[in-house]
Amino acid sequence: MLLTDLRTIFERDPAARNWLEVLFCYPGLQALVFHRLAHWLYKIGIPFIPRFISHISRFLTGIEIHPGALIGQGVFIDHGMGVVIGETAIVGDYALIYQGVTLGGTGKESGKRHPTLGSHVVVGAGAKVLGNIQIGDRVRIGAGSVVLRDVPSNTTVVGIPGRVTRQNNLNSNVLDHDKVRDVEAEVIRALFERVKSLEKQFEQLEQSSLSPTELGDELTDNPKSKNSDGMIEDFLDGAGI
Image (tube, rainbow, N blue to C red; front, side, top):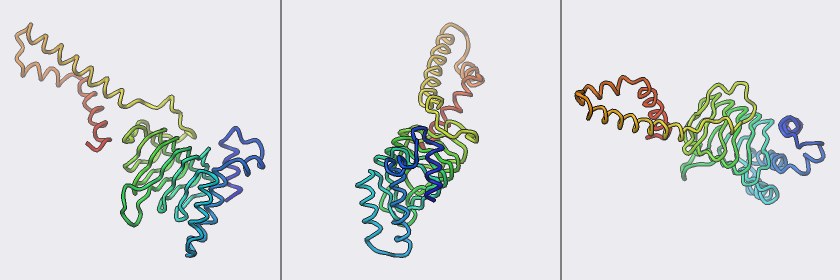
């Protein structure tokens, strides 16, 4: 696993120049080495020592991984300061996690209470993935997002709460924030256009003989109105409203 982790760092980080630098200067790799030892001791039922190793790792690297968490091979924690991974979290193979990420719970419930990440997932800086939810394979989570619901595979999620903004991430190995849709701005624009359309319709009503019912039918039949209705409904559904 150490060799796989090293190879992954060299593939994903252009700043990685030699194996000595990676071994001694990459806290993400060091935290994973500590965790693999702590997790092995945790699985065989050794008390206290796994948590103490985790605590030492947190002190040295700034990355807190509970010994009970399951971390796949080839996982790369880039920079890593402030990363927190809870006890029942599962991180799939070749996931990429940036600094400030939290894979946490939403309360004091027992049992599986932390998220499960699929393989090749990218979690942007400062993102929070909370609760016993499933994040599919090749999902991209934007920086600063808060994800509270299951996310299907091959999608990009951004926002608070996180909403799917793009599908079919099959050929994407990174998260291009400059290409992510601003869903909130799109919905605000749709609402603004709707208000302008309504104002125009009422002006026409004042100047014509159309009845309010006929005017309402004309607005309902407008394709732009139908498109914006769908966009607004998807936005509200994503927030659980």
